[in-house]
Length: 232
Image (cartoon, rainbow, N blue to C red; front, side, top):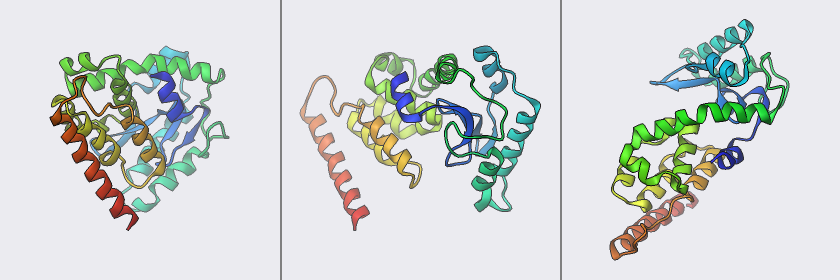
């Protein structure tokens, strides 16, 4: 799981703004999150940094985070939200110079400690969304790696359609939902991540049968139609 997320997120010892203007550090650790359609400072941010790394967030960094939240929630000039947030962070590349004082002095070692401290939160988020029985059934599988990766990227990505497909044992449908309906817009990076996560799903249950084969054929037919529309 860690290697998969590491490969998708990369690492930064300094705070940088991602493509959405979100201040990020370590292995994709977002310091600001969106909840109920509103941006806010991450819950337990200071506690997580303190407990995992013995780092105390400086007041100037807290003030800057609150300014970023205001910028991202701005409804007067919404087209400038991302650029405003990125300007406040002062850096859009991993390990670059940042307006934040926060750094991980031990580099990836610090990033791994923080990851280890928070990853169970995302596993629990997956459990909450798909239920105990399905979670226990998938635990330790490649499918679970994909689901936790999605939760790490944004818990809302595991939506009702994906949960329904998994509950019905329809892996082909789950594959399709992740690959095509969870892309979140036109970002090539997000689309590539969803492709890699969907590739972790087997198209068949352990027992191959005619119904499963028909479902896979249906999904590939829809995929082909989507590809044709995009290339037209």
